[in-house]
Image (cartoon, rainbow, N blue to C red):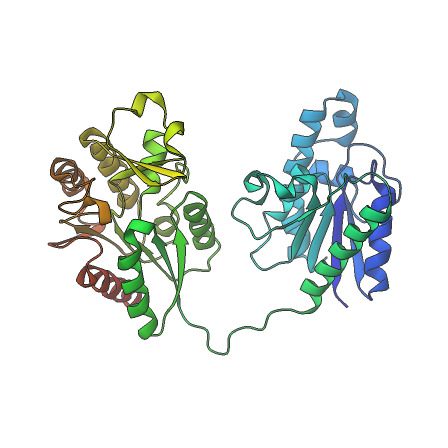
Length: 400
């Protein structure tokens, strides 16, 4: 019989959680309860709040005595982050459900493997959910009304959520009949032809390709999957997120982008896709300091800014330094005639000096003992470049 973990603040929402517990058990499933509130629960859970606190080196009595909501939330979130994956690894549950206590419980949910059913019912589900979901597959379910009491609205939402998690747990997805080696690739609008050519070639050779949009979240998600051991090869042709990280754009993927494959010894082919641009929102949101730069209105919601010679020097240094630490097979491919659709001759971001600085910095800084450097006299979206990148990755994967 499958088991659903129910996690939450049983001190303030005990009635609501008992209702959900009964709904799930009436569906023929078992429940496993985890209390992550600060005070005494309204019913006895399977895992106490002190056990949660102790997982992060805390004591629930000390946390409660401080009467500091922020500190208490932070301590219990750390505890959930550690204890929830441990409990899952011990076989205590097959899926997890929560109502409220969003920042506390999602910290634990994010630590679970991709594919484990995880559902959070919350008032923030219709807003900015990235801080809660991160790079995981948490399902955010709008609660419509606050989780406070049982009424005609809340019981409908709670029941639907319970049925949803029950369905996810009971009807597991079947594994593909023939498991293929998995390649992760990065793409942006201005590198789409390149990645499509490469993907088509790899699929013809029997590989499965996951394409990640290099919008910050996409890069983070790819790095997370590599860390999780899901990926056999990486075709990181679009490294543009580093422009936003260095210059201050809106699509940064954080300072650890370009690290996972090298650290996990996963074969990787990397290129300089879209390093000619920093991303901002609508034109009037571009910071005043950049108003005199080379700006391009990609659409009403997106404004692009050409990277400068100095910024390309810094980009070259960062990328070289990241790749030089790689412990697995690594190749860097340079498209000498343009790093994006907008960087070819006749287009608004065409920049010979900028690209020369980028390429020269990489040439000088790359450790040739660790990274194979390949230069092609084409732009990144030429089919020849894309296929060459795909072939090189296959070669590295076979060697690995």
